[in-house]
Image (cartoon, rainbow, N blue to C red; front, side, top):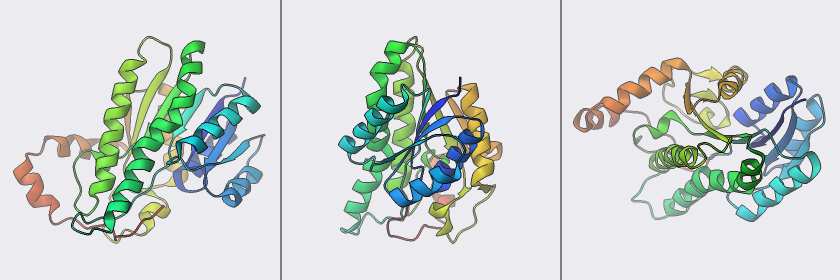
Length: 255
């Protein structure tokens, strides 16, 4: 029997690449994003039958409706991938950036919670299924000029850890996929060097293999896993000195 996979942020970037990877394996997909035209174009390019659901994960009512519509049409998913995310350069001293902070946190953290929430009770009742959250290596340490994004991804990591423990023994698995740099519209605006960059389709294939293994956490590519381990152990005084020289994402909300 083919898998059923529910993917948020499916209209572009890694979400669309994940959709292509799963569709190629014969999965039935729930494609979720804010842009209907992009979702429908993606659906029409894929083999198989898939559902399109226009929703903003930052609006809990919308994502709940999308989840219920998918379950009503296709049944309980095997995998739910909370991939939707936004990024922007931010400056805490700029009052106008408060709204950007709020949007990033609502999308990247609360949007993940809202994506999983409608599925948890029925998955627990079934004693199966997998909840996958896409975080980021950017959550390992605070990046200058990206405080909101780093904070949202660090919080997402801790949320996924908590949820994994809460669901231990229920048959519902929780996995965190922690990417490094992936070539997507989100990274296209960056003007600084991005080491170990992966093309979206290459990254998606690796994500799918990792999800199959159902790890607690997988960092992709492996080189960034090494970087993450080193960064986590660097003392604050040294990290501050090194990170102060890092490039910064341009201010302004990017999808």
